[in-house]
Image 1 (tube, rainbow, N blue to C red):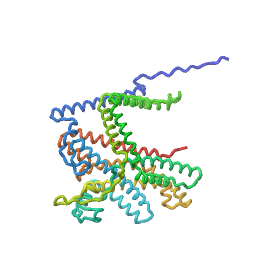
Image 2: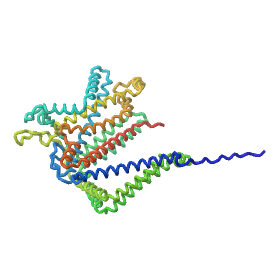
Image 3: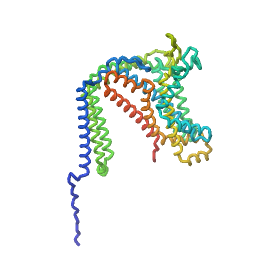
Length: 507
């Protein structure tokens, strides 16, 4: 009996105009080319129109005196446009960071209060949320600004707690705690203490898991950190030996030629791209795995390589970047050298009480205390109360999303409501709460731009003043875009980091 072999003809490759891979890549590359061409055309047209109308462009205004005075900040009389924008950025970050901290605390408390079994507490929290979040933020900021402006005039007898707390139509003054010369040395002690506290926490946790003994890992870690803080308060000058080390590093950095740093940066950019491509390629390190490579996977590989080449091109074509890195690193090391002076026994922290000065006919707050100017107070109260109302709803929804069986199990083992909330409900709810709360952080940061309505010197208000004087609107708007993009990406990275840390690990 003769065996019959049936040969299957090889599948014919479709023509190029019907090949899905070719069509996909051609469409993407064509769309990218059209987008770049349109962008180049628009930029060219904008440049021609500006030149025709005699409108100058450029960033030379950053180095020129702005001739403006800011209402508040680290420098109320900046000597350059760049310094003025920097003051605006710092003011924006101040109110954003402080607002995020207080809005998170208040929103968490109100969200838990909405689920309270106490009728009065639950209803008060509900009224707060339903009222605040339905009133436009701009209206609230103007309202708080008017309330602060209606407070009594500032006098030497202004209270309610003379020498400790002053409340008037010029703002609120509180005692101020601030770092002084010994702070950096004390911070080095605290950094060592944080590492030791982390080790103590992990060992206590491991001992609890192995024996079931109550080891109090959090309390032990906090006690370790407090011990280092107390010892560092008196012994921080002992780390003064770091000063000469930073000085030697500064001398080393100043001796590095710029071309050497450029070569290193190019090698780092290309090496990072090659490492990512190698790691990604090894994830498909099998015949079956290589067959699973899709067009998107090939696009990722090509994009990583192109990105590394572009980064290298930026380093080569823009020598000012490497020069700035060298100068900034040298200046930072010199600063640290001065801060870590051996034998400097100054204390790490100091405090000052608020003082009222009367240089002329009208009294004013002195620089000694922590002063919340009317504009800052209005914007701060507005963004905190408004954002806290939304965070409260997110917290309430996250708690309700935890299965009721968890609470029933906690009650079955004898846990109180507070204990079950702390140890069982909130740790699970945080996984649900964190992503939408991150969006609220971004909203709060962007909402600070409404501070222009009350004259607070944030980045938008300072930038608007600058382009009204110089006419460099496009340049200032570009700086705004880059700043808020960097802040948004930074907040997103922080939230995503903790989101990954809180993610359940499946076995």
